Image 1 (cartoon, helix red, strand yellow):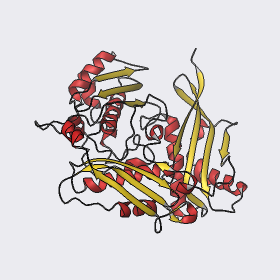
Image 2 (cartoon, rainbow, N blue to C red):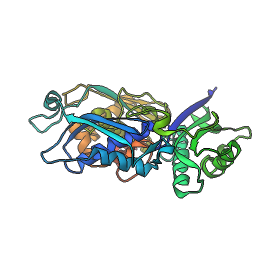
Image 3 (spheres, rainbow, N blue to C red):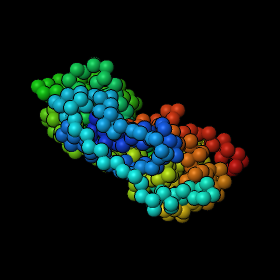
Amino acid sequence: MERDYLFTSESVSEGHPDKMADQVSDAVLDAIFKQDPHGHVACETLLTENKAVVAGEFQAKQGVKFDVEAIVRETAKNIGYCDAGCGFDYKTCDVENLMHGQSANINEAVEKKDGEIGAGDQGLMFGYACTETPELMPLPIMLAHKLLQKQSEVRKAGLIPWLLPDAKSQVSIRYVGHRPVAVERVVLSTQHTKGVSHKDIEAAVRAHIIDPIIPANLLPQDIVYLINPSGNFYIGGPAGDTGLTGRKIIVDTYGGSCPHGGGAFSGKDPTKVDRSAAYMARYIAKNIVAAGLAERCTVQLSYAIGVVDPTSLMISLHGGRKVEEHQAENAVREIFKVTPKGMIDMLDLRRPIYQKTAAYGHFGRELPEFTWERTDKADVLKSWFKL
């Protein structure tokens, strides 16, 4: 008998303090990569009431310049933090720049004399794909992201004039086996201007944000909507909660549908395998599922600092598999490049593409820049297994 259960994922908006911090850190990375695609960056951002602290290490060729204060202000402006009453004001905020040069020890470990690249740190990374959605992502996290993308779209279009940037969503889905059958609970908390009634918030959020996103075929009669369940939410953004880079790692990946490695992504150049190997693991998993080898796939990669080859590669084909897992691992070793240099080259990661990754998920968005979302190896995998 198939198991019947609820599974929940959450997301946060681009105006959430942690996500704003991620965007600042990745904007610093992009600013360096625009001038030096071989630069090394590890950037962290802390945000609090009208203040940003940007710290970290970098190495770049001589002459590379980047204006941290301008990056913070532009990022906040684009999100919509244009007034201290919103929780942050791009015009008046205080910015402290604590970026400094990278450790020579780390650089020696990463840059090899033969042109190869050693892993920038030790760690383990996971990738995942499944057939629940056209994006080959779990449905709960995709709906949670799409709700907040809609919130941003509605806010920036001025359709709901009292909407502010900070927001969170949560979606609980009923599964039978591994098949989603109903959306049973939707939580959406959105920052708003002072003086708006809860009744008006509920009506507008339902009409303009939730109803356009939740699939009609998954709506049960007893669905529960929890809109701003805490009541007033006019104190938000960094004024309401401190923001830190790398604190929303499950939002960044698969919403808890698979294991997660130990590292965050934002602010790190792709020699840091926390980022590049997570992208490669997704690329591998997505192509395996797109090739029809399995309905679900989890990939794990692991690395040691300064070492070129991964310390392990594991593939799990959970359901509906057509091949053996050890066969899939052999195929992946031949078809995909899993050294740090191989991953960077195969996915073309030395480009200023990273600020776009820092809100609404690193996976499941088929943007041209997101090379790890391509399924161009699916036919190669089919041929390998003569399918």
